[in-house]
Every structure is written in C-alpha cells, then in structure tokens.
Length: 407
Ligand SMILES: Cc1cc2nc3c(=O)[nH]c(=O)nc-3n(C[C@H](O)[C@H](O)[C@H](O)COP(=O)(O)O)c2cc1C
Image 1 (cartoon, rainbow, N blue to C red):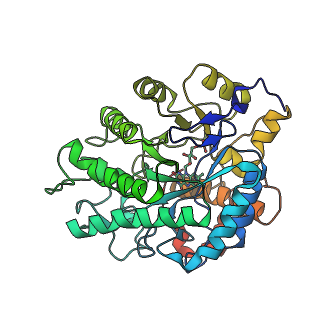
Image 2: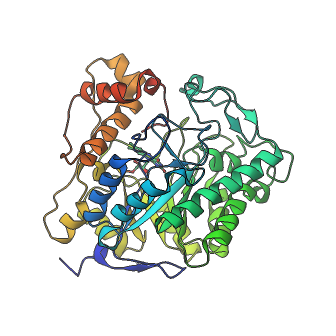
C-alpha cells in the first residue's frame, strides 16, 4: 500500500461520512435482474467483488422506482419491501472492507424503449429526437399529481435502500432520463409549477432531494449525477447546470458526479482511451461550491488520476467500464501493480451492423463481463463483437436489440 498516493487519501463528505479513498465506481446497469426485476445472487457476488477490489464508493446500476417504467430489460426496480432480504445481502456484500455502497435511483421518463413501455411518460408530450428516436414512443405528459407521486417513489426507494444497509443513494439526474427531462427546456414545456423558469424546472429534483433528506436524516449521503450540458439545441446548458449545482450545494447534497449527454446525443462516454471528458467543466464548478465533485468518463491511467486529484480538478475519480474488466483497479494501484485498462470499440466486421448496433455492442460487452465477474470468472478481453452480442440476445431476448442508452 502506497500512502503517498492522492487516490489513497480519505475524504469526508459534508454530512460527515468518511470515504476511505478517492475511487468512485460509477453506475453501470447490470441488466441481470429476472423478469420480476428483483435483485439476485449475481448482484450480490458482483458487488462483493467490487467492494473487495478496494473502491471507496461503489454505485449500483440504476435502480428503477417503478416496475411499469423501465429503461431496459433486466433493470432492478424497488417499489416496496418485497425484496428486502436480497437487498440486505446485496448491501452486506457490497460494503465489505468498509466500502460505501450507494444505490443509484432512476426513472426513465420517455427514454424507455417501445419494447419496454406501452406509453412512456414525460414532463411534456415531446417525442425523443436523434438517430435513435424511432425506438421510443411519443410520451404522455405527466399530470401534476403523478409528478408528486414519482417524487415520493424516489424517496421510498431511497428509504428501503437505507433500511437494507446501503450506505448512500445517488439521484440519476443525467443522461436524458426523467430528472434530466424536467431540467431541460427542450423536454419540459409545462405550465404548472414544474415548468418554465429554471427554478420551476428544478423543482422536481429539489422535491426528490428534500423528501429523501427528510426520510433519510442529516448524515446519510445523498449524491446526484448531473449532465454538464445536454449538448443539445435548446437543452440544459452549462449555465443551468451551474445553477443546479449551487442550489443542491446550499441544500446539503453530499456529492456531485459530472457526466454529460443523453441518448439523442451521447457524450457520456467515448471509446478513445486517455481522454477525460468533463474535467474543465468540473474545475469551474469546483470553484463555485465546497461539495465534493466526481468526474466520470475516460479515466484510465494512474498518472491521469493522480494529476486530476493533485490539480484539484476533481475530488474523486469516477470509473465505469475499466472496473467491469478489472474489478480491483484500486487495490492494484495502491499496491503498485496497475498497468492500464483499454476500453476499445468492438466490431462485428460488418460495417452497417457496427454502425447500427455500435452502442448496443458496447453495452452488451460490459454486461457480459459483469456477469462473468458475478459468476466468479475473470473478464474476457474480446476483440470481436459477436460473442457479447449473442450473450445479450440469449439473456434478454430480441427486446435487447432496441437502443436503450448510448455508450
Ligand atoms: C454497461 C454500462 C451501463 C451503464 N449504466 C449506467 C447507469 O445505470 N447509470 C449511469 O448514470 N450511467 C451508466 N453508465 C455510464 C457510466 O456510469 C459512465 O458515465 C460512462 O461509462 C463513462 O465512464 P467510463 O469512461 O469510466 O466508462 C453505463 C455505462 C456502461 C458501459
């Protein structure tokens, strides 16, 4: 163990929770739940492995607040206490070695593929655009009462997570899902208190946070994943994002993770190694608020991680895909035996198929590796896309072929 490394330094969150180091495993949807959307043994073993791998905060894949509104096949959904026993085992395994295990909580809104939702809901009845738009049905506008019901659902899911032993929660406010849809003027044209000014567009998120805070208590970590911008004409801008960050900081949020983009305009990840996508933006908001900031997207090398921390550009190092290939990167770095992990694009060899299914192939590959880890096997470093693609088809059926989120 090398105590001089920045990544090895502990971090105290505003609410008082102490995180043992600066590694943050960003959410990756496992797509491993059964048809009833309950967690199972695979979740327990996967998160045990990540916790034992040395990460300070491990965030789960997005957990949905409503079984009737899923983002993709195999999502976990927590609406009530029916799965409390599995959740307790999941929490126990995922907090080994005093790792923090946070549940990411989400509602897809209109970003629920037509194969999953007969009629998705959204702040306004505006269809999805972008090259994948046809995969989604035009949503129905939520009534004011329904908005308030979803606020409550987020808080109920968080309360059950705490009861089960999860040590924090993260609101998914990024990547074009429902919270992001409310924030974005391109998706939210409501006339009630949830639409119009930024103050109104933020109300849904603030009510979710306040309701969670009142049920979870002052010291329990609540974080948010937020887009720096939607990269979309008329969407949520960096300026809007800065205002949201300031408001959430004043209200006592414990941690802000920065990402960007959505389905229509995927910017949250890239296949190019060695690039960290949102560092500049994070640096600016870090100067605005005292809340710890996590930048996710592109961290691969130990040098890159150390430099970003030393320069004060981020408080923690957010890592997703590399941890699905090498689950103990933190231990390897702290024990001085890490080299690097490459996350390169896989191809089928058929260019039109690669174009159409590029995003899905990426997701399939990492889903397959997560399942291998859950089964106690090492990840397989494929070069060819067919094997992961067939794995996803076997597991999720033909519905898996519709776009879900871009990679
Ligand atoms: C298979 C897979 C599933 C993902 N699921 C989620 C998710 O549920 N919630 C989320 O906020 N981001 C999700 N992401 C995005 C990652 O958290 C992360 O922002 C992105 O992969 C960039 O980080 P990286 O370069 O370290 O992989 C997912 C990414 C992958 C590859």
